[in-house]
Length: 129
Image 1 (cartoon, rainbow, N blue to C red):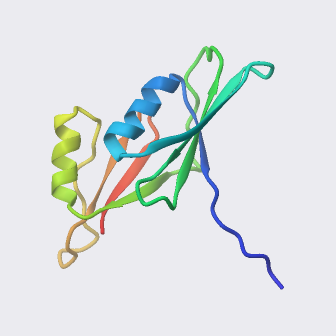
Image 2 (image 1 turned 90 degrees about the vertical axis):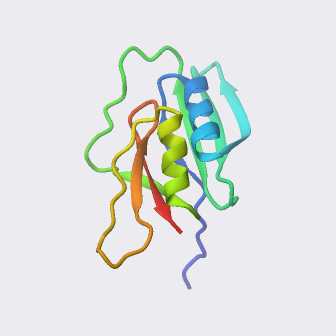
């Protein structure tokens, strides 16, 4: 019999921990749930939970990174859902975040989606619920 698995978190390595915490709080309403510093290993972990309480990201800050991380070509993005895509988009525009246009997969589809970039360039897809 297979085990029941539950998504725990997604890890993102960041250059500026406080800037990233502020982004996820202000742009996506994530909340810091815990922080653990490991000075002997020279890194800090900050866990942030999405508003619905069903998704968590782990921001990993390695002390004094010298160069930005390479985002690679395998990981694409994670996604969040909102009730009003236009309102969300306008708010993110007003806050000066880097955004894509709002896209739709077909002319008949309502709502749509867009991408917002965090301070390290990771993309988050914002989808109309």
